[in-house]
Image (tube, rainbow, N blue to C red; front, top):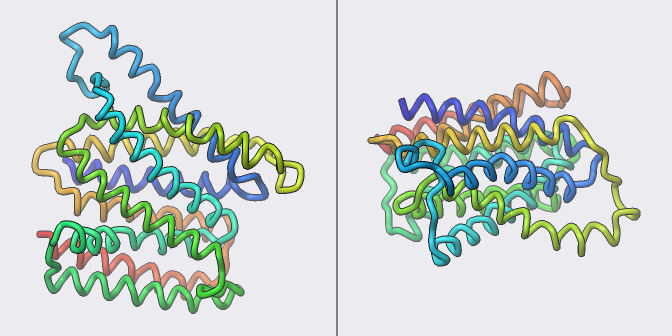
Length: 299
């Protein structure tokens, strides 16, 4: 059952990426990101408030948000900063790059998580996992060749750097999730880190975007903006719920979630009419094969 929820989370993430791409098209990045954090926090705020007045029989349920001390909230604030850093890099990169390039790069996050676990936790990779890592590196190299056909130089393009940094900080967030889920309630983490992100984004909007908003791309409201938050909240909720089920494996869940690249790739091809799909599809297949080998290595 937990694997089914992981696949559902992956599908929701694919739609999340597509709505994010559409919302960022010819639009100001920081206001879109701020509204995403705001709408996401509004989704979870009622659960926090209702949990404070919930009767004892309801406490401990699926949507219950327990109280926590200041030290615990400190851990959640740190997660907010990590996730927000990943989003800032990712939003700017996605605005300026094709979705069919962004998706496969983001799909390499499980490889980064594995390498991070090896460096931080002393984990050893087996043969299947090394094959998965090698295929991910090969796919990244081939993707750079596909990008050159569209005038995108991976070595000197700052938006490629932004997407890579988004993937790296996203991998850090995944490793941190592994630590947090051992000791904290999933709803506690998900609800509060969204709310803390709003407070972090307020000075960013006021100090960085507002003074120069007339000199940059203007902000335009799009109906896809609230859909970013709705699909992200749903995807993360299913993700955390999957991790809370007995016998669930975070390594497999994280890899399955990166299968969202299939959905986002189809959106890039069919909705955004992006180019060089044949060569990018080969790169995507390499990524997926690499993920399969990572899965074999975790069995």
